[in-house]
Amino acid sequence: MKSLALSLILLGLSACSWAETASEGNAPAATGAPALAATISREAARPTSKGPSERFTGNVRVAPLFSANAPSHASGASVTFEPGARTAWHSHPVGQNLVVTAGKGYVQFWGGSIQEIGPGDVVWIPPGQKHWHGASQKSAMTHIAVQEHVDGKTAEWFEQVSAAQYGGAGAQKAEPVAAMPSTRAQQLMGDIAPKLAELTDKVLYNDVWARPELSRRDRSLATVSALIALNRTEQLRSHLALARQNGVTQEELIETITHLAFYTGWPNAVSAVAVAREVFQGNRSVGDSK
Image (cartoon, rainbow, N blue to C red):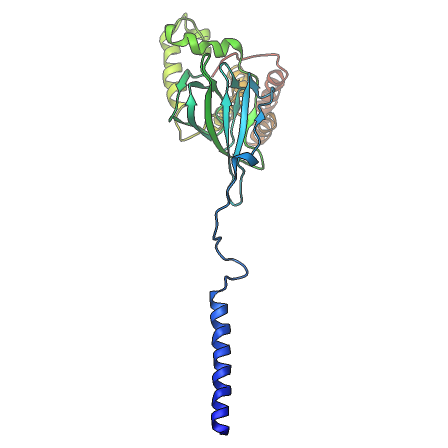
C-alpha cells in the first residue's frame, strides 16, 4: 500500500514538472522575441500638410509615409504638386529616390537640362546634387520621395526656382541646343575659341563632372583644393560659388582653405580667403557657371 501511494505521488510530481516545462517551452522569451505582427501606419493617422513657401513654389501637399526607425536612416513621403508647383533648389546628403505615381512633371540638375518624368519613372538624385523637381505647367504630379538623414538632416535648401528657370521646361524642346551662350564656358570663350568651349561643356562638365563615382559636391571640393594649391584665384572665384551650389557649406570651404595652408603655402591660403570673402558676400556671381 505504501509502495502504491509513493508511486502515485512520484507520478503526480512528474506530471507537474512536465506541464511546467511544456508551458515554459511554448511561451515566448521575455526579451529578443521576434514580432508576430506587423506595424501598420493607417492613412487616417498620417495628416497631410501644405509644403512651406520657403521650400516650394505653388500649391504642394506633403503626406508623410514613414520616418526613420533605427538602425535605418531612411524616411519617405508622398508629395503632390499642383500644375506649376515645384520645389526650391536643394540637395540631399545621402541622395534621394523619387518614384512618380501620377501625373507629369520635371526634374533638373544644376547646370543640366530639364527632364520630363511620368508614372512609373524612378529618379535617382546623387548625394550633394543641387536640383529641383515638380509638376508640369498643365498637369499635377505625385511622387514618393525616399531619402536618408545625416545627423537628423535630409536636405539642404537653396534659392527658389525662378519663373524663367521653370519656364524653360515648356520652351526647351523648341529651342536650338546652342541658341545662346548660356554656359560659363560659352560666355568666356565661345566667341573666340568655340571648340574649347564645346569641349569644356561636353567633356569636362557633361562627362567628367557627371560621372557617378564622385558626387558633384566631392568634385567641387577636389577642384577648389587644386585651384588653391595652384593659386588660380580667377578660376577659384567661380568654383567657390559652384561649390556652394553643389552643397558644400561656407564653413567647409573655409576649413578646406585653413587645412591647405599647411600643405600648399600660407600665401595661397591668404589669397583664397580674400576670394572667398568676395564670393560669400555676394560681390561676385558665377551665374550658371559649372
